[in-house]
Every structure is written in C-alpha cells, then in structure tokens.
Image (cartoon, rainbow, N blue to C red; front, side, top):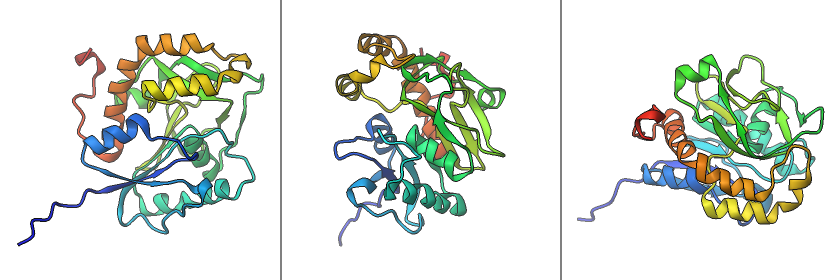
Length: 245
C-alpha cells in the first residue's frame, strides 16, 4: 500500500522580477511546514480566483510603484479583494503593503520633502503594536514612496520620515513598509544593483547597509519569525526578543 506524505499547506507567494526571491520569509515558511506557490504576475503568471487551496498569501516588493499604470499592478491591487473577502492571512511587504493601502483607499506617494528610506532606520511600535509583540528598534528599507493608513486599519509601528510603517486591517491583513526578508546575499545584490539610489535625499551609502546588518539583523530575524507566527501560525521560539538575545 502506498505511503503518501500529507500535502503541505500552500502559501501564495507573489514576486515581481524574474530573479526575485522570497528570501528569509520563504525559508522560515518552508521550515515551518508550508509549501510556496510562487507566481510572478509581471511575467504573465495568473493569480488564483480563490485561496481555498492556500493557507494564505504574501505579496513582496519590487522596483515599481503601486501607482504605476501596468496591468499587473492594477490586477494585483484588485485581487486583494480575494484574501479580504475570504479572511485568509495576507502579508504585504513594501510594494505589497502599498498595494493593500491603495486597495483600501489609502493614498500612496513620495515624501513631501522628497526624502527616501534606503538603509537602516529607527522603528517605534505603537501601543497596539507593543501589545501584539516586541518590535525591532532598527529596520531595513529600500523605498521612495509611502502609504496613508487606510480607514479602520490599526497602526502597529511608526517611523520619523514615513510615519506609517506597519498596520493591520481586519483579522488577517497585514502590511509592512520595511524589509525583514533579506538574506545577506540579497542585501549585497540590492546594494550593488541599487547603488545609483544612494544619492537620493535621506539614503544611506552601501557600506552603511552592510555594517548595519551586522548590528541589527539578528533582532530583525527573531522579530520576523514571531511576526510570521502571528500571521500564519508558524511556530515561534518566543514573542520576546530579549529572551533570545
């Protein structure tokens, strides 16, 4: 008699470039028993009409804007009605968070003084965020636009230049402006390929990106594990960073 292994629950994983990777988010989800259903809409991959065969979804970042006229940008933004209607766990990271904000009626756009966040910047949890879990004090960014907090959404974390850094909408929709998913190899690629952006107002030079990783990344990784546990039910070692550091 054939001994079949139980099928792993799938997480829809939406990426925006041919060589994009789900990075540490993907690693942690796989290690915790999930399978990744990777789709790249800019390359023609369709999104499912329902998430009934998925345990949740993640939309990652990309160099494009949530306001771009490309068909796939509008399609992804409109598609967010699916996890919201089905109350399936959803996480938007950077561009994904901006798409969620757009879908919910929040404006996405550049900083009024032209500031960007490219490098490591301080993060402050709100009262609601602190009640949920411990948050890192420094996080990694690579963006030129931010988002308004959608109506009825709960702000979880804030920053100096871009006040809306993380939010929750309803029971299962989450958005974060920063990047906790980068492996060391990913960060090195971003620093090389995105070096022209270091001249933008408020950006940090590449050396600061890599030096900051050595200082701040361990805490960020622990936070990510706990955050994924909160969203998808991934087992977490602890919800208190101080116990592990």
